[in-house]
Length: 378
Image 1: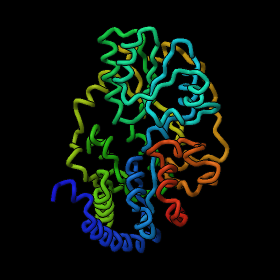
Image 2: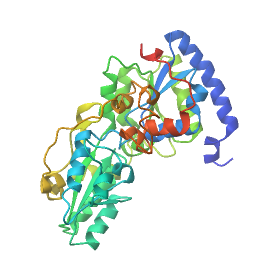
Image 3: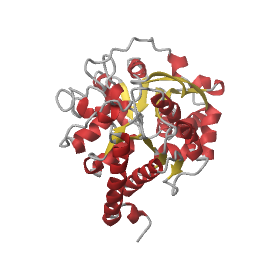
Image 4: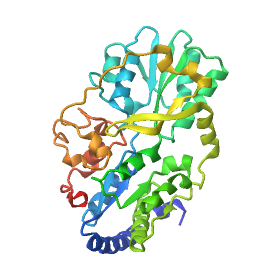
C-alpha cells in the first residue's frame, strides 16, 4: 500500500472508528458529557464534514470548529478598511484572495465595490500582485494580506521583492494573524470547555510542534493532524488515549509535513519583514501580540501609511453569530439565520462565504444532521 493510500483506506477508518467509539464512551461516562474537541483549522472543518465524521461520531464526541478560517476571523473594521481602499478609485487597483472579495463589511464588500466600478482583482498569490504592479506602472496596486502563519511568508517575500525592485506603485495592507494567541484566549474563557485540540496542519508546517507546548500547561491533549480522513480519526484516537491515561502532551500526528521547529526559512522571511503587534479578530476583539505589522525597514510599502483610509465604526449585522461560532460556543445550526436568510448565495457573515468557513461546510455537507446538543458547554 502506498503511503498516502493508508490515510484514505476504508478498512483502517472502520477500525479507528470502532476504537474511538469505545474510548469516547468511557470518557463520556467519566466526564458526564461528551468530550469536546476543537478542530482549529478551517481546512480540518471542511475535511471533517466532507468525510461525514460529524455524523459518524456525533453521538460520542462534540466536534467544534475554531478560529482557523483566515477570512472568517478578519475583523469587521479591517474589512471596512479594505472597502475604503477600493473606494479610492482613480488609478488604484486592489488585489486579494478570492474568498475575501465576498465578505460583507458594515455597508459594502469588495465585490459590491467592483460592481460599482472599483478595480478589485482576485489574485492567487502576493507574487501575482507584484507582477501586476510591474506590468502596470501607471496603477497603484494595494495587496490585501490575509491569513495565518501559512500565507504570511509569501506576503513577506513579495514585500522584499518589491523593495529590491524599488517598486513605487505597490503596497500591502496587512491583516495577517498568529494562531497560538487566539488559542490561549479560548482556554481562558470560562464558558468554553475544550478537552482537546486537533491542531492545524498548514500553520504547524510553518511554526512547528514546539510552538504549541504551552498547551501542556493547560492540561490539554492536542494532536497536529493532516487532512485525510484517517489523519483526523487517528488524531481523535490519540487525544482520547491521552485523556484516558491522564496525559496532556502535544503530539505531532503529521510528521510527513510538520517538524519540531517548523520551516525555518519561512519563519525567517516573516521575522525579516514583520513585527508582532496586537490585532482585532472577528468575535474575539483585540488579542495581544496576535497580529503582524510591517517593520520600519519596509514602512514605505505599508498601504495604511501610504493612503491613510479614514477609520470607521463597524456595524455588525443583526442575528449573525459568526463570532460565537469561531469561538466554538455555537455551531452553525445554532444560528437562526443558517440556511434561511443566510446561505452561500446570500451570505450574511464570513463563515458562510469562505470555502473554509464552518457555516459553508455545514451547509454543504451537514445540513441533514440532528441539532448538536449543548451538554458539553453546560
